[in-house]
Image (cartoon, rainbow, N blue to C red; front, side):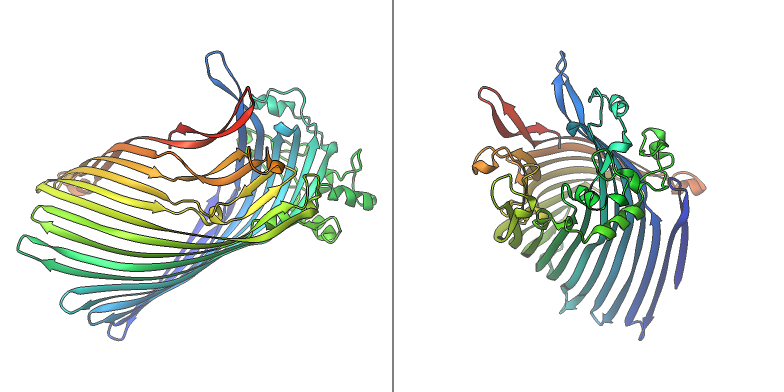
Length: 590
């Protein structure tokens, strides 16, 4: 039995409440045939942070050809977050005369409670925003693995494994309130951050409640696997031996995503102010002032004093109150202005993906030479269920006219993946290793789901692509190794060709449905070019065993890697005479 307790301190928040503890117990029974290990753990951690981010785009070019960039948006954020982690595990094994069976069960959970306050300089739209978000996020994982290994006959080795795991990520509570100041800047140089901050009017009397949003989300995944491996050693002579190995595996993933949102609409908060004017401090246009939501929170020493979070008279507060934001939502959530947002609902999906794989391989040892080769075949079959959204007419329709319909898609493909390794040992202190392998990487589920979210206000479409290809890589490696009792020196070179890298393109619709021309289109795509990665590596490890006493335990390790690469990134450009938009790519480092 082992009990461990740890304490911690978060300097940014000056918080001593960080804590971690674990309890482990283990014992063998029945003449050591049965073993049991139990583990429990709990952690409380302060994960608060200060943040800043910016959206930057091209403005012009200098006389010497250098690009001048400007700020479209600049954002400051203060996040207070408490994170709880806890879990338990159990391992039970049973020893057989020629093998063993092992059951491994794990439960793990993470609960996040966070309050985020932001100040946003929305320069492209000429307004300034403040917002506060109170969110809870819970993640649970449960996994069971039953495995075994056995020896049959003289030397036939059998390994098998089955598993069932499930994960869920839920957002049981999220309330966000956003406030806006229109015409928020004087004359401004948007290429200079100090000019931007100095040009902000910070007119809090005309900063009004824009919207209140409540979200909930439920994402769950269930995974089943079954695997069998057989291994048979062989010996053809005193100098030739090795083994043959083959096996198969099946994996099934079922992932569901259900998101929904209720919000006050574009002008719903103004309607509530008109209905209950006596309840609020209103601005000159009868809108609810941000002053109704100011509390006593102060982001002390925000960003080490480099930026002002505001919005109160102090440079970092007092800021918005989560209690007042939550209370406002609870009081008015049943008003007719709070409506279901169909655009968010269009992000629901379900993906079922099954992979069947089989392989055969062999290792042959011939004196100083080792050859390892084989081939794996993977067949992937996917079913995708999602929602497609569109408005019920032209772009002047109200948001409430958005309609959704269910859609399905399927996709299947086969991947043949050979590999070969060679090692030749010239002496007892020098060998050469060569390798060729093929690998794949599948797109994430959201990219494959055939959903489509259409936002007519922002003229934007966000969608998935079910026939997206997997990324395929051809890898070549060569290493020279020199070693003795003192250490190891390795020189290596590698080269990779990677095809069908998938990325999210933000382009413009230039053909097809005339009602959608000019819309921003956000969707995953496969790169049409081949990404190349090449480089050399030098690694040195040295043991100072020749030094006296405790110095003989010193180990020195160093590594140098020189890498060159190129890939292709999405790039949308505009040509003149005639004016046209072209969705292109540009070459850059990977």
